[in-house]
Length: 257
Ligand code: HPA
Image (cartoon, rainbow, N blue to C red; front, top):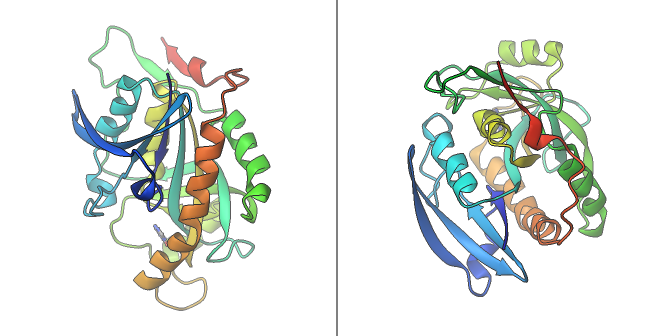
């Protein structure tokens, strides 16, 4: 059985026939998820903020989530992340493919290799996101009437507060395009586990200080709702394809020294 996962996509599986809610116990905590069967593929839906959207970014149990997917033998993950934009070319309502990141989180466990293994492990970051999945996404956007504006460098902040205008000026000067609070360590842990992972950023607002207006909660929800269902349907179509040829190096990212 092929197993794939969608992180952050909601509003689709709950209306799909045969969706079941299940849970799994990991060494890092318990994880509950929804599962939908499409032909020979089982697609797992993980709500990273919890189904009630009650977990703030710094309290998400990233290691439990990613270990659960590994234990379920998931080999491909597509994720949706809400982001603010500090790049004039990417407006609220747009979507972008995340192709690199800068990590400004402060207080998160970033690794499964925390000194309790025999040797020291590092994860290679030439391609932080799976090139093969990113290519599949780009090909799929048009067919699903999704206008992807391009690639983006994702800046991950600790949150839960938004950034100051001075911080955004700094991130912009450093080369960041979008800012969010959840993609790190999620993408890094996927890489440590050798799981192919790609993420799409949904631009929900201009970052602090870009337009001089305060960020509004309703704006974030509206932009997410506008894109989330179409994106989830695209992910489902791509992930339930049966091709198995692996042309990426995601399974060889771990370096033991
Ligand atoms: N900053 C950080 N995280 C976010 C934002 C933002 O402006 N918008 C959505 N998630």
